[in-house]
Image (cartoon, rainbow, N blue to C red; front, side, top):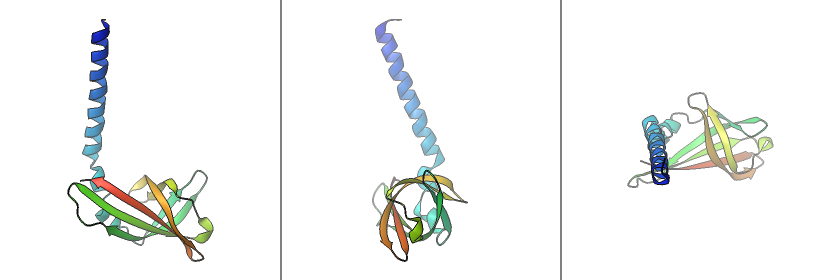
Length: 126
């Protein structure tokens, strides 16, 4: 095979693989699966946050949507947990019975004697 044909076919395969992945993600409806309305239905329900060793229980205490923006869906989730189960800000698996496990970046927003408040911000293309 000539070098030019080899490179062209490789580029074609990479492009095809990329389009297949994009179609798969679009087909799943990622925005719909993670939308604010979906989480609002789970308000005041327990979630589990998994770090590398253990799972801690938290409760979803608020879902706040940002003002509508063209092509962008923005919202913030706030979770409350016990002070003794404090986690640092970072990416964790967050599980709920209705949605299964999802990766989220959680910011340890407030820490106090009453517990820890974690915040997850979402910016989704609509």
